[in-house]
Image 1: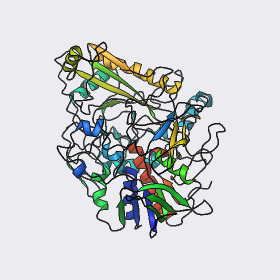
Image 2: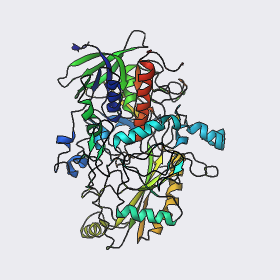
Image 3: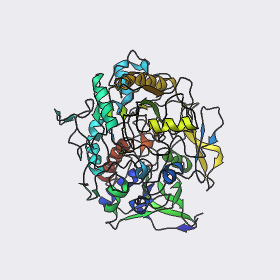
Image 4: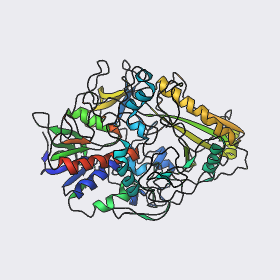
Length: 592
């Protein structure tokens, strides 16, 4: 029983990061009364990005100021279906955000689209390599939407975000030195590419020498002053090096606070409530219609908020948690293979190559920008022949000089003592003479990698925690090792004195202690078949037609790139369907 029952609103949005902000802007433009609920505190560029206090690695990274408080709500993990799950008690392998803006406030700014075949991964592989090429237990499937359908939304996202980059092909015509493998675009990036730092220049030169196709990576760190389609302004990035994990004090890194919220503040049909932890989506007696949500407010009161339309826009796997505790859709069972909510969870498969140079290289590693750098796509997606290799998936690689911090940024060569005078000398000698690049691989989806509700552990509100059952598979390790080995030619062409490679070995388990990437996906997958997807191609629940979900949780497979650009484009795709189809006739937009 709720302590408070409020007046009905037309739309309630659960979670206010990038996708929640986009949906709020789109639906307020449609004339709807929109309420957004964010579980964390209110955040904005000021005071959360105020200079010089924001340039504090200890507070923001080591002490996790903008990340989720694991003492209040967490998750549990186990490596296999028969294992015992234990809580994730401190920030390590990934860094979920909390508060207004979510991970969109503390992200780095790397802004990618997606390769067309990744949207149709199953049908693409079956057509090119045959159905037997996909390994037993791998549950890849198509998104249900094509690159051509999403391209206008990718373009608009780049204009909203003020993305800096250089195109290769626009409207079928080669126009610049962008990504050779990228499909044709309808327009150029919003801004020219950022300047290339010295480390990325070394990578670019070496990659070209060994026959690859390097290009300046697209970045939502503004290369110049910019005003987006909503009238929101950005300032040029000054390469301070404090992007990932921080709020940008210079209004240079795209975020919901910089690129959308100023426009939302101007309209009367939008409200944002912070410190409102949504417990569940409420359903009517038929379980086929949502009546609103129930949340706990900052005073600890339980509040029932009626609504005609519910948008789940929480971070990645949290949409699955919300659906599971609300009874929206059938929970996935890995033994029978039945059910869909929690199915097809994906992470990403990372490796890093470090090159150590003599003490006179002087690369100035403190200079950096979160999304800036040079990348190669020669081994991403299906840009290379997988036929004789025996694995699914690929990996872009990039040198991303984002700014090396004084605490964590102290790489040293193999054989260096872990402490003492020799360690100090190694830190001093190598800080300004080390270059690294990442092989940022796709992670496929499998029958026994999923999320469900933990039977033992609960959060501060007494709700069951989300339980991850996940581990690395041979397919992804094989892919990562293959691409990393190929990229060693680039490292050697840079002529360092030594090279250190960090890559997963067969048999390695997911280790939650050290940071890898925050890019989880899946759990409320979209698709064309209600037997294998939670949402239809318009991101509408198959089971409850006035519930939609947005964010990387809707990805039915893992991709090689960072997920933000695709998640944002899919949100605009979903909003268009709501505005042009659903509002005119509220109904299931696709027949089950």
